[in-house]
Length: 452
Image (tube, rainbow, N blue to C red):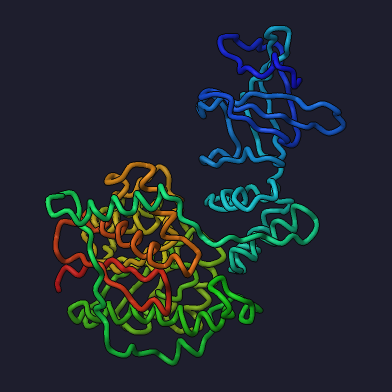
């Protein structure tokens, strides 16, 4: 199968649909032979020789599972491929029509891609887990590193250390950042302008001792190390997360004395209810809706709201936010939302929250996070229209550099992206603000206060 005759990709020959193949095996070699095909060598169980298959690059020609634009053709991954065979120059060719991932490779990047799927628990079997086991692992809110190590242990059957490298910047990415900064600083550029954030809150923030006395964490997780350095989960909650939510409260309090009138808030990706409960406890007339696609987080949020005696003013909805938006449109403004909030809503979830606020003329306080994440295809963030695909990828990656020495480039990329996000709003009441980076490196906040 590895002869020179087999190295050329199939071109004009039409598969003989009467000669079908059905292979399950491990990817042992991979080659990008041309613009049309990827060549894989598959090692099947109990076979001494590998089978060579060709997968068309045109995604419409192949049925993939998972199919959500996830690349799972990594070395050491186990796949199930079916399709048609034909003879070319005396060599049997295998043209893939359907490709299914059977087992994930012990590859950090590949595991992250699968976990980025909104319905990732449906594919738990590829990690040698059942759906309940994977869902429980994700619901524990361990650090990403701990989750990856647990999955790799499940795949290999033994503990395997994960190698982490500090974030590095490619020259191409840095060139793109410099180019976009120059573009944003160009006074003749009418498309968008690079903005600098202001710090609107300088006074000491007030805290509600009732909420601080209730620890909103899964049972038994208080002493686990968080994903944010050396702090435990409880320490992070008390010294970081509570400060972030209180900043939101104080910023909303500055909304033209709106705490004196009934308000309806929408908390996008509010999960366990940290922000929603704090808002409810500080604004007695406020009613809140929390939308999150994580069912276990929503359940924990309801329990937390009950402990804090605000359950009657917070509605927790387990739903994809794009579906919530469609239902809101169908209700034609019934139970109108006044203010949209989102604290570290991942990736394009922040962009969809901004889009919702713009369409429905809501005020908002939105702090983006996890800039490269894309959960809501085919939704496209508005700021992408101001960039090429390469620029979007480079800027998003640079924001997430996990390296103290790269904080400057990370912040600069954040400012570029959020400046472009602001351009979707014409009016001057939309601002870029920030809170202290001591409580989070993702501290850029977009604010719209239409009556200020």
